[in-house]
Amino acid sequence: MVKQLFLPSVWIAILAGSLWWSPLQAAPPAAPGSGTLISELTAQQALLVANQARIDKELAAIKEDLRLARLFSARSGGKTSTP
Image 1 (cartoon, rainbow, N blue to C red):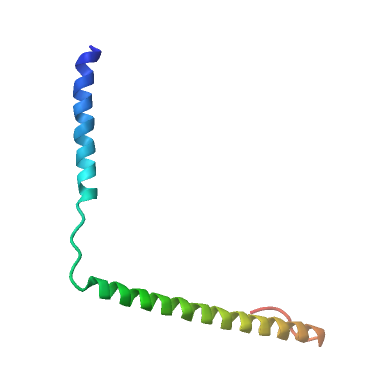
Image 2: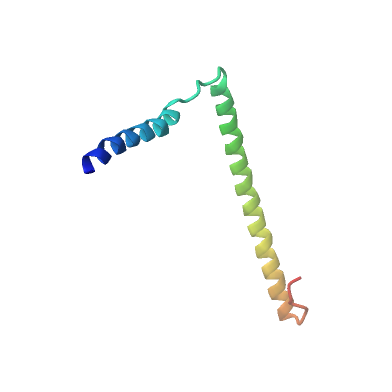
């Protein structure tokens, strides 16, 4: 009984493995000019990262200014609750 089930199960495993593996190996060929497109996208992404860092820096400065304004407002007896 074990011999009868062993050989078909091996063939099924080999077939399933080959069907699963074949789409992973077949990569489409790169289009001509895709290298320049990738380099342009990389440059744009670097620019976006730099802009985001600058925006984060400015927002941190504004947040600190607001914190100080609330602190001095509270010391002078003004309204301190946040909107």
